[in-house]
Amino acid sequence: MKSFDRIFAAVITLILLIFAVANMFLLRENNDKDRPYRVEVSRLAREIEENGFEKIDLSVCSYVTHVEQYGRDFYDTESDYTIREIGGKLYRFDYAVSQSDKSGLILAVNLILAAMAAVIVTMMIFIRQNILAPFDKLKELPFELSKGNLTAPIKENKSRFFGPFLWGVNLLRENLEQQKSRELSLIREKKTLLLSLSHDIKTPLSAIKLYAKALSRGLYPEKEKQLEIADHINEKADEIERFISQIMTASTNNFLEFDVQNGEFYLSDLMAGISSYYKEKLAFVQTDLFIEKYDDCLLRGDLDRSVEVLQNLLENAMKYGDGAWVKITFSDEENCRLITVSNSGSALSESELAHIFDSFWRGSNAGNKAGSGLGLYICRQLMRKMNGEIFAEKSGDIMSVTAVFAQV
Image (cartoon, rainbow, N blue to C red; front, top):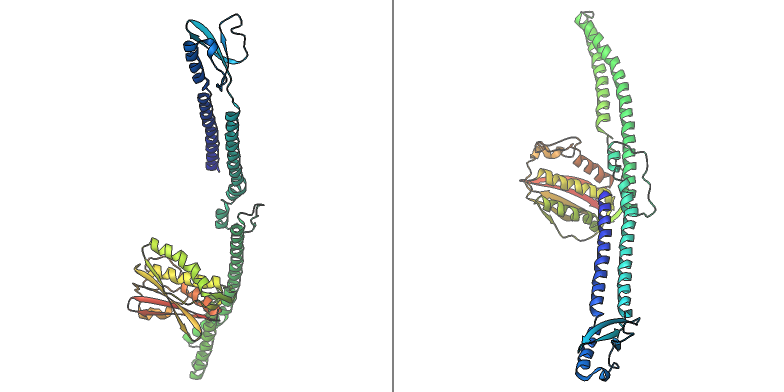
């Protein structure tokens, strides 16, 4: 805002300067052009000198209205005049200069400049009050969201210039709030489950310890009794194993929720959201992006989630490839459209290929690259919720991941 205010002050100063320069120029030009009477005075002076005072003809003069020879009332006039000495005598030349045309021009120029200045100032005030001032109030919004302040909705201003932006931010805020609520609920449920299972594990574990202590002390010398105790220990071990399996299931399943709104969308809409952004992004890192020509068709699924899937595939291709090229190709199979994202320079081994869609799994080619091991896991969950599928192939150092969309 302060920068804009400085620009506003500079514009006002410039407008005032233009006014001053324009008026000075017009007035100076006016003064220069308002002196043609001097030409007529000089001509009349020559005529008086050559032919005498009585011979001059004022009917052909546009500016000089009267010529008076020096006498008693020589200076008695209300008109503008100039005095010349001709043949040793003084003569007064009265003249009149029309100002109407020039003053009209000066007025018109000033009115035009005033109108332009008013439009510029009005527009700048409008921009300041309706665009910059509301946006200035939003500058703290990202910091508030980053700090977890998600409860207060963002109010729209009357001008509604930021309608889509504020709608998107409010949607983001609501999604973050819902995710936070779901996360807290999930943590609470898992904690309750773990506490319950931990308590349940104590009972068979205590029994195993008692049986083991009895056997170690020789309390059951009979062979049959020892076998019976061994069976009990095995049963309790199986019980503990079931509890551990439940813990493993709780820790791996349903830790992410996917909201998918299945419908219909065109392939061109999906690719439009991908190609424009990634062409620029890959060009910036000097990686060639090849997008094969395709026939448009109607696909089943969620357009936003489908964009998310392809974004994940392209991000992986950029991250784990050698940066030479990334390619998007298309094919058809059994009423499905297959979209394949390929990249060069893959260092993933064939044995690791079967695990790339597992949650929290990262391959040997990950190195020190940032990541959580969830990208492809999320892609598979989304594709399956959209009644599609996803699979990966490797040929030499070329890695290809294919998303299968059902056609309408």
